[in-house]
Length: 169
Image 1 (spheres, rainbow, N blue to C red):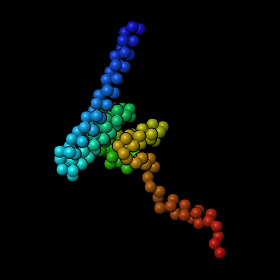
Image 2: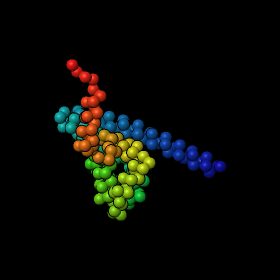
Image 3: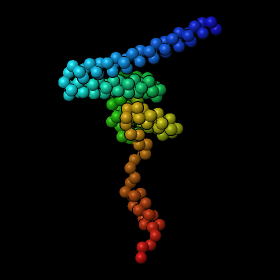
Image 4: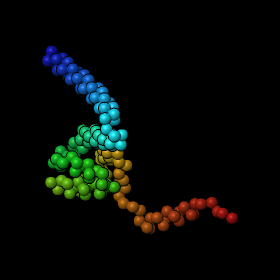
């Protein structure tokens, strides 16, 4: 019990130190922006500040992406060590089928794409976490429809709509 309290105290102290470092970092960033703005040409300073802000935002986004439980699970299960490759897969995929195929190409163990699709469709296990990971990357939700409606089903839908439409006279 005493060691648990000591561990909790150390953890709390570490969290406080991290918070303090975050504040120092923010202050230093502000100071540096002012110095760069005053020393450099305005266009150069603005470009430098914007570039560094974008780099920092991307770093935070990748950190959040890598800490996402589903990403950790899928990259661990499939032995994918390239986090940027995983990000690219999530960015390129426009459907569940495409995501599974891209993961299969990235996976050195060659996981079966059809098997992934079946698992994801079976119990909604992947639906929320996949779209949550895409949200972190600033992407729209992925489509979980099997495929686009066939021309026959579109024709049937149009006939039903026409049949149910009020008569115009």
